[in-house]
Image (tube, rainbow, N blue to C red; front, side, top):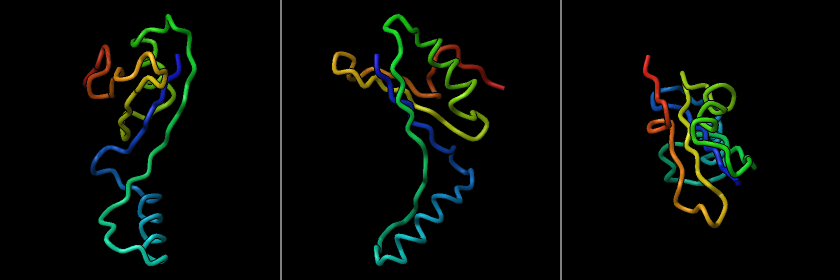
Length: 96
């Protein structure tokens, strides 16, 4: 099963990379850009029997720093289109 993990900074967290991109776009003459937030995309190919809980654990332990980042999981396989979850509604969500 192919998955896409989108990792983005939480609102309010400073984004120096996004700021640099915004400044570069402005310098290239692109106007009307209000804000830029940079993130990362991680593609995983996992066994079909991998559970949402296991995927969530991968994200929390390695792929995203949940103190400052959110993540969203989407299935990339055609037969799984429309499934997925985000850090906001992930299985076994723990609040501190």
